[in-house]
Length: 82
Image (cartoon, rainbow, N blue to C red; front, side, top):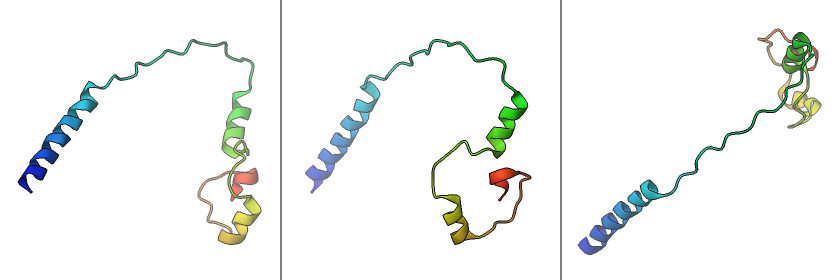
């Protein structure tokens, strides 16, 4: 029993040091790209806050049937109103 315990401790110590010696990945820089200009910042902000730019998850009508109308804490409009 003592031999098993001692060999377990030695094995754990050896495995601990393998993580320190493992080769780590170096970061790779991403080259810059040209940016689009001429957009309307106010419209973009409105779309991010109130728009439906994420099309995933449970459909809203099924979600509303199960959970009901929530208490609105944020002043949003459109689909995200609540």
